[in-house]
Length: 100
Image (cartoon, rainbow, N blue to C red; front, side, top):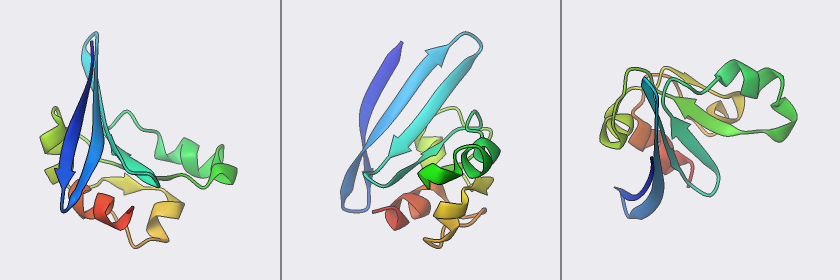
């Protein structure tokens, strides 16, 4: 089951996606520039193998809902996200606002 949900972050309406899979749920919330995602996101792969794409992304672990993804502290971020001031420890919502 895939659910697409509008997510209010500040004055912006973003796209939240929830994908229910066996034994796990994938979560992401995106802007036009980047996205935050649950623990399934491989930041190392984005930074190393896909570095030429300059992907702006961040990961939060232990989240089970889109609301938790917004509130959770980020566990890791891509190099391109760091260039925007996005750092581990900030909330998903704070990171998304910097991705606008």
